[in-house]
Length: 235
Ligand code: FPP
Image (tube, rainbow, N blue to C red; front, side):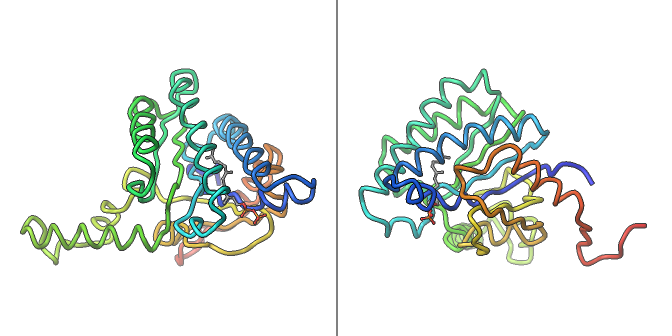
């Protein structure tokens, strides 16, 4: 089996990483954002085509306001840099999630980063911001309903494939591998539809410590698994 084409990651453990060092939680997020850059480079080098990262969930709004603001600042700073380095990195950036709740300036920045990077596809980086899988599914169902009501879609025409085209991830293949760092083994409302057949890998280290060697270990574990899709094993 070869390198997974698409890896989805739940970047957990920034807070614990910071606490262990006696630092504020936001220092953990800053280290986590820096690690995103390193992992993008490593993923591209290893031949991964799609990387989809969970940066801010619909549930994260319940965190202290200062922490949410700091996360937004980090994401905004990251996108700002990405707009400037798009050519050099040849990376297509996409954002999934309901961005309508974000500051208008931040929304414009997202649209701009997606636009300037859309000509590239050496690595496809998708960042989930204000993302929740159930929310994504509900938004998709609403759009399907609207098209049926408008008479442009027949209910019988709704298939798994067609429905996937209404999701935020419509331009992406399903992930082959999901990685969650920091020892937790939960999906936390991430890509519930898209992860139906993916392999799961749980790393013990917190996200800021998840380096290239850790990524290689996750890919090795993936390559050694026997993916059966409920079918008969190929001899
Ligand atoms: C989970 O750690 C992590 C997050 C909620 C945020 C992830 C965000 C980043 C890594 C920064 C920016 C991202 C990009 C794409 C530039 P936690 O705070 O839940 O950690 P804990 O469980 O140890 O408290």
